[in-house]
Length: 148
Image (cartoon, rainbow, N blue to C red; front, top):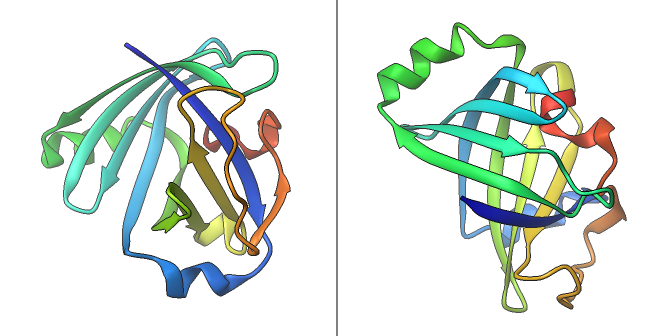
């Protein structure tokens, strides 16, 4: 099991889209949204995944995470068991000054919400912020996918 160290930001403009090297659609749901652990099912493109995440640290920067690729049809069936509503989003992958930003543009009931994430090797790792990056929301539970 790995420790995920991640910072989250709101996105203040659509300028990021022209910089994306890749993008794909995601559908995801949660079998369990307990504060101490979440169990997520995700279809990303044509691949299925199950992910278990532990409780976040007080600053919201890190938590234990385990993820495994599963059969697409199994993931689709498991989404039927997930708590509703499911989340629909398009993920854009953007390399910026040596770092990968994953920008999620949400659809349906969360249309208009755009959140950027960057995974880091350690909590104090410096990185340059692109101009389109807005307010930091790391640790704000209102922006956890499991709470949307």
